[in-house]
Image 1 (tube, rainbow, N blue to C red):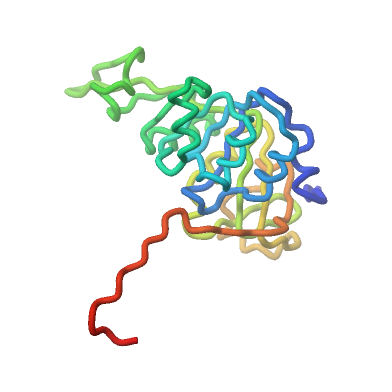
Image 2: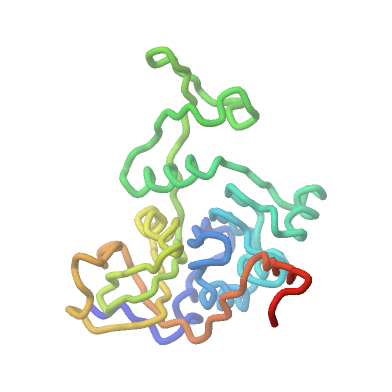
Length: 237
């Protein structure tokens, strides 16, 4: 089955307002840049997004914020986005912060068919407010529920026409788990190959989880926070 679609625009054409969408990546590494750009063109609204972070001003999911597309967000880190800070303070967006490991496990649980699980993380903090607690052995745990989505927009390094995917380095964070936890998983890849060209030992996401594959047309891959070390006095060059 050939799952390749002609463009990022075609890949996201049926995503409607008020959908719940997972977006893969870690920081600005391994994010579905082209799918996000195509989604922004559609100007749909009321989206409920799930991602580790929220991009930065003017790039990634930051573009979705600026377009007024997001109604609520679940994530673990939002520190690089001033627009998000202003919207949360103004009551324009509902933000739920989740410890990073718990977020990853809630997504993995959604894909594995596990409805809920207990963790010690967040106990005694606002993270645990209103949640069920249980004593197991000599420790108290917090009940966390699985996360699911209507769509998952993910990014892989290589993929074939059947939807089998390989990730590269940090881009492997969150993308594979999200691929399993959505009704429709859409993957953008940097390189498309024919079935049989990928080493089965290297495939992380089997094609059974992927509904659509698109080759990214353009990648910016910016550095989220750039720090330049000052040259020491008297140094060479």
